[in-house]
Length: 103
Image (cartoon, rainbow, N blue to C red; front, side):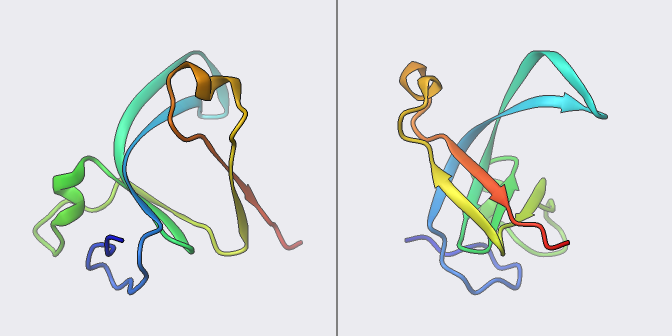
């Protein structure tokens, strides 16, 4: 199990690797064509951290690129979608993140 990069996190990653993500909307408007891009992620029990590539994820410190983004998973449910029709086409793992909002 890989360790997350030195960013003040002491958690072990559940999964890490390349993820193809799809952009469905921009500025609140649904896109006519799906835009797929790849990034490198670290998935832990509390966060998903997105990096440009594996090299960017391994380097840390002031002189290196910051992560592309981070999603806080505390209070969220993460599900592996096993029977999704998209998975049979070309994707190995499809995940769905359901955030629990406290109002």
